[in-house]
Length: 386
Image (cartoon, rainbow, N blue to C red; front, top):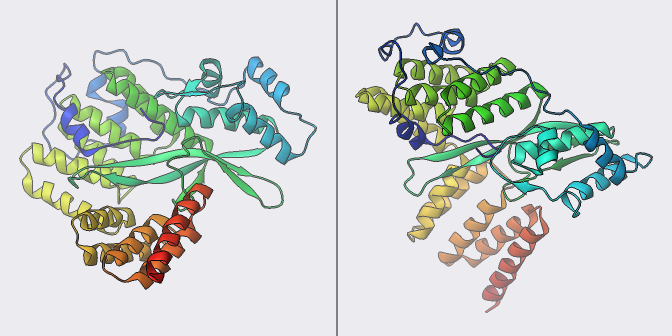
């Protein structure tokens, strides 16, 4: 399981092939009497099965070894900025620590001990150490753009968590261990620790589900929703778990609850469409597919996907149309400006091509990105001069 919560449309269809759980026959699809409490506390998946006890873990616990590490590499008498810089160097910029990425979600202490983990693991570690140094560190959710497949039928939707630092003099910093996916143009907001724990247990539950450990998955999804009942990813994953264990009515109820707490969840709608299609309820399936299409056409990153498709096929007018819509929805995204520039260039409009590439360079935050757009801009200017 990645550090980000992930859900793809084909997952539910693949998981339903698993053998059904033992016990009473599954409820009839469409039965609306299954409440959220029944999904968690009266689950048919728990009948005759001993669920593991999932107690609330202190995901930010500091061990004596961690405190020794901090004292060895950070001078507590220095200014806040210096302490932060020393901590960053000790964890990310030196040979002392050597973090290795893997797909497992771990607490701060586990991450320190094993020197391994995903981005949520590293975020736990950094938040714990920064707070110990008197630095105001919080968890922050980043809305990573959906990544649509070339078929346009499935997408990856992620809720990524990184570190938000509120420094003195109204300064702020973001520490993100998944630097390749990070962009300041993504929507983001600080979340409380309980929401971070919901991410943690949801990740553990998904890892258990992928390993076929149904009791552990159910117990951890329950723990996630105990921390935050409005956390839609856990409701969706719970629905996928019910569907793979052949309890379609419970799966439907879980997906519906996800839509109750997050009405525009494309992942919940898509899973419902797939569930209804599998049951032969094609009208309902199409209803939810239509809703998905309406909402993703409003998504600037889906428009970028369509623009790339149009550009690749030589339909530059359509590419420009999609990109202009994307820019109206989300300004400041250099990828929109860059592709719009190239679309105008292919149409022979060098003036507009140069103007939009300049915008791409101005909007780029990272030095390497600015240099990339700058090189493209120089090339465009040479072409215009010729």
